[in-house]
Every structure is written in structure tokens, then in C-alpha cells.
Image 1 (cartoon, rainbow, N blue to C red):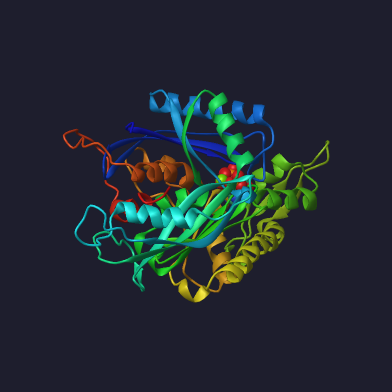
Image 2 (cartoon, rainbow, N blue to C red):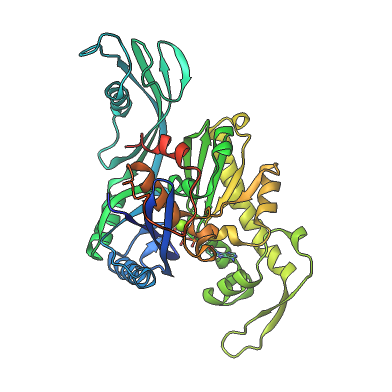
Amino acid sequence: MTDVIVGLDIGTSNIRVAIGEIIDENTVDILGLAKCPSAGLRNGSIVNIEAAIAAIKETVEQAEQNAGCEVLSCVTAIGGAQIESYNSKGLAAVSNKNQPSREINEADKERALEAARATLIPLDREFLHVIPRDYTVDGVSGIKDPIHMLGVRLETDVHIVTASKTAIQNVCSCVQRAGYGLDKVWLKTLAQVQSVAHEDELEMGSILIDLGAGTTDALVIVDGAPVCSLSIPVGGNLVTNDISIVKGIPIPAAEKIKIESGCCFLPSIQKNQEVIIPGVGGRPNELSSQVELCEIIQPRVEEIFRMVRDEIVHKTDLQRLSGNIILTGGGAEMQGIVELAQTVFGTTAVRLGIPESLGGVESDYRMPEYATAIGLIQAQKNQYKVPDRSSRKTGSKGNNKENFFTKIFKQLF
Ligand SMILES: Nc1ncnc2c1ncn2[C@@H]1O[C@H](COP(=O)(O)OP(=O)(O)OP(=O)(O)O)[C@@H](O)[C@H]1O
Ligand SMILES: [Mg+2]
């Protein structure tokens, strides 16, 4: 494993790159970051390869300059409509070959996971992750790690994530044609969980919601492992579109007003500021207000949250979710977003998903929009044994979640 990991987040509106140096098992230094406008994507899917390649290249080059190092390969993530997920089971007889007792070892675990994976999936799809949720040994369930237990019959419950082959091929092709190797493709929300979630809330059952520009993705985690992932093909772009139509202004002007003065929860507006709507084609500017803007934004964001909520209610057992709703992605930076989510989901347990503190200039990446790029570095790091470089002097902080995530993510394949 190289000691530099590059997280590449190819989004509908922005491409972000984070370059992280792995100092030791618990420490990552963020060496450099870059964010550039995206091109060639619609609702999270690549629709113009050449445009996407150029945008990826530009962002990686900028990150290389900021970090002062060369990027050879990266890890990236996909989400959106290209993803499907379901739960499955695998069963294996515990082998007593080459050992006196039937003690469960890695090979038995592998065989149980292989069996879970042996489900038929359409030819145009491929496995992205097979995530063990828990194990049952001779009828005793709820076992997180069965290694060294004695038993005859090993069962595993897994969460399987598949992706469209074409989507993965398009991502690979773009990254490789931009001149970089591709180490792995992660489910976007699974990478985000790594950087923004805490062990206790995942054990209690939590929902991560990524509010992007073209898609809104969610991952439901129960007992520390994913049970359901979903995606809705709408995001912040739709809100911008609404402002553009209602106010009769071009999209870039509507986006600027949304970011500077937008709020999505009426009671959160303390002082009703004036908002200047620029005149188009020589028309004079128009005066509006933050309240008026909120009346456009709130119903749309509320609708997006309702769609996510209804799908989660349909697919999972809400009784098992007593942790938090964690909001990430650029859309989570909108004023009033936490309060609106609290209202729609009927709980006060809502918070912003800000990447945890690592080494490097924290103010540059501790924002919900960097959850994917930073999470990719952590996800990739937790998969491998990190070389012991403890003798090195560093000025970075440790990552205390290491043990928990290492446990879950080392088992992914
Ligand atoms: N401060 C802000 N207030 C309101 N909205 C914001 C703010 N900052 C960013 N956004 C919105 O967040 C969205 C972009 O989020 P993000 O960069 O996470 O999306 P993306 O990764 O490019 O898209 P996707 O994940 O859907 O492919 C845009 O709709 C943008 O308007
Ligand atoms: Mg995104």
C-alpha cells in the first residue's frame, strides 16, 4: 500500500479531490485539496466522457499543486440511480480440515460470504460491496466476529450493493484517460460514513443523507452495518431551477442568490433581509426578501426529504433507528436544513455531517461537502494494514474511530 491516498469525488456540480498521507494506523494528514466545477455529468451519471475527463484532470492537477506531490492513482465513489442494494444470507459448514476442533477461521468466513454472494444478478450489473452484517453460529445469532468460536454451521447476513457495469466502466475510463490509476470504486455514502459518523450512533441505527446537486442519496445503518441504500434523482439543482423560474433569472444568478441568501426553514429566518434579484436583458433589478426566497426553497427541500423518508419507511424498520440523521453534501450547507429535517422526520436527532478532524488545514475540509473526498481516504486506509512509521515526527491528530471502522471495512470485498 502506498502511503498517499487520493480521494476523488466526481459530483454533478463539483469535482473534489483530497490527498491524504497515511502517517500511521491512526493518523492521516490531509496534504492538499481542490474543488472545481464539474462537467459532463447529469444526476450523478457521466453523460459526456470528454468533458468529465477534462474536469477531473483540472481538479487533480490543482490538488497536486496544493499538496506538492504527484498523483498516480486515486479512489473514487459512485452513487445515484446506478446503485441497487439488497440483503442476503450465506451459509457454510465449518471445516475441521487440518485442525483438531471445529474452530471458525477466516477461510470459513470467506466461504459463508462467498455463498451469500452467489446470488444471480443481471448481466449488466456487478458487485460493488458485500458487507457482512452479522453472523450466526449453530443457531446463535448476533455475532459480530465468529473467529475462534466453535461450531458446525456458520451463517452470515450480508448487505449487497451492486452497480451498473456501464457506470463503473465510464468512471474507470474517465479516471484512466485523465492519466491516473483507479484503486477502488466505493459506494459514495459508505465512504461518507467513514468521515462523518460516530461508532455509537451507527450502533444505535442512523441515516446518512447526502444532499448533492443532482441526486440525494441515503444510507441506513443498523447495529453498525448498512441495511439499505437509496437514491433519489433530484437535488439542489432543482431548488436553483425553481428560483430561476419563479424569479425569471438565469440559473447562475439563481444559484448565487440561493447560496448567499437561501434558507429552507421559515422559522429560522431571524431578520428578513432584502435580496436583490438582478434584472435580465437591461430590466431593472428587483427587490425581494429572504422570506420570499424561503417560500420558494422550503417546499422543494421538504419534498426531497419526504421522498427519502417515505422510501426508508418502506424499506426498513424505523423502530431500530434511534441514532442520528446525518446530513452531508453541499446541500447540507443551506441555512435551516437541520431544522427542516427535524420537522419532516419528526425527531430532534439531526446533525450536520462534517468530516472529523485529521491532520492538515482543518478549515479547508471540515465542511459537509468534503465528506466524500475525505471519507474515501479513510475508507481506503481502513482496508489495509498500514506500515509502521511511528518513528516519524508529525504534527497531525489521531483518528479515534479506527478500531471500529477497521473491523467493519476490512471485511468488505
Ligand atoms: N451554502 C449553500 N447553501 C445552499 N446550497 C448550497 C450551499 N453550498 C452548496 N449548495 C448546494 O449544494 C449542491 C452541490 O452539492 P455537492 O457539491 O455536494 O453536489 P455534487 O457532489 O456536485 O452532486 P451529486 O452528489 O448530486 O452528484 C448544489 O445544489 C449547491 O447549490
Ligand atoms: Mg456529491
